[in-house]
Image (cartoon, rainbow, N blue to C red; front, side, top):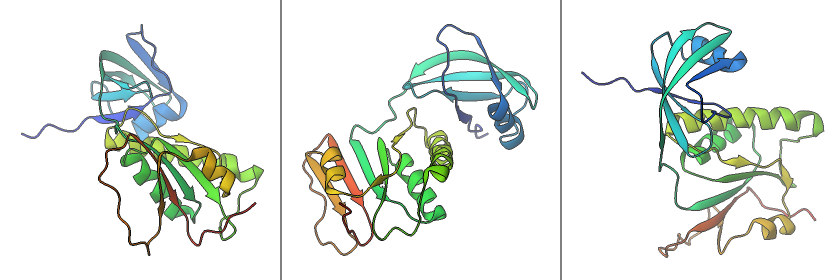
Length: 203
């Protein structure tokens, strides 16, 4: 009989010397109402430290879930390649897809950018909501893909030469659907990817 895959769940901070962790608020709601986990079920917790915990639900209500931490182990699931992605902001579903796939593929840092041709316009009142929304996408993707660290997401920046210079790496690539060059087979440890549509610098 095929073993059921354990649900993975991100928690901001898991104390080192604690046997039982109480999850409340949105975390409790997600575990009981979205994942529909019950008393006695096993799950995996991780907290962006590079480790994950085998755990079991002791008591689950819609307001609080008490979880017993069984064992901790370090996981080598992160890409050895340090990838920074500078991504022009697109409409909601397309941008959500980028956040999801970038996380699943092992990107370490994501910088959303606005360009002269960006259709989506952000201001102070909605940047916070967008960042919160993207963070949820990233967490969900990390839970599903087995990552133990979340990619860092920077608040949106204006596409400029100064921005490129700040985040450039020894190996940097401009992703162009009409390009003819391919990636080098040379082994690298750090790279920057730039993904824009109809790139126009703002200075």
